[in-house]
Amino acid sequence: MLIRIANVLTPAQVEACRKALETAPWMDGKTTAGSLTKPRKNNMQVPAGHPMARRLSEMVLEALKKNEVFARAALPLKVVPPVFNRYQGGEHYGDHVDATAQHVWGQPEGIRSDLSATLFLTQPEDYDGGELTVTDDLGGRPIKLPAGDLVLYPASSIHHVTPVTRGVRLAAFFWVQSMVREDDKRSILWELGTALQQFEQALPEHPAVVRLTGVYFNLFRLWTDV
Image (cartoon, rainbow, N blue to C red; front, side):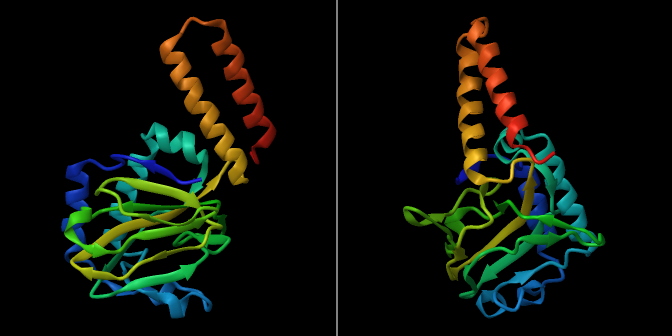
């Protein structure tokens, strides 16, 4: 399931990220890659423990906490604080699958990666290439969103970032451990919850709203890991 979430960051927040990243202490992205993905990874990242990265990461996490669509789509239990990356001059990231467990800087325990997320920080017209391409049953689906928008996709999916041939692509990426582990069950809850929300808006007093809400909660209760 691919879900686009618009306006996670405001234009002012996007601008604050971009301005801060202009003076960021970039390092080779291969530093954080595993043995299988290191040959495929060709980008730059800000060290997760750097004060600038932690400050920007907290801003993104606060925005996610306030975002109702993110909450309904991801059903988050734990979120790995975002890391910031940069692609330019032909840099790219070949086909790969994200690791099952992701680690939070400064903490010993890992987080199961059910969902991957990319938050775009550069307007699509400002660079060529750089499409996040996620492979599903329909083949490769290229994704290039406006700055401030986010895409959620299963961490188990094969994906890549195409070479950036003009300009600079800035983004934040992170992982989510969901309260519902399986993607197909999260998809059902997303579709049911979205339809229920529309039903509540159209017919708020209809008695079936309560019954459908009960169905949603009972499925959630049945499938949650919590």
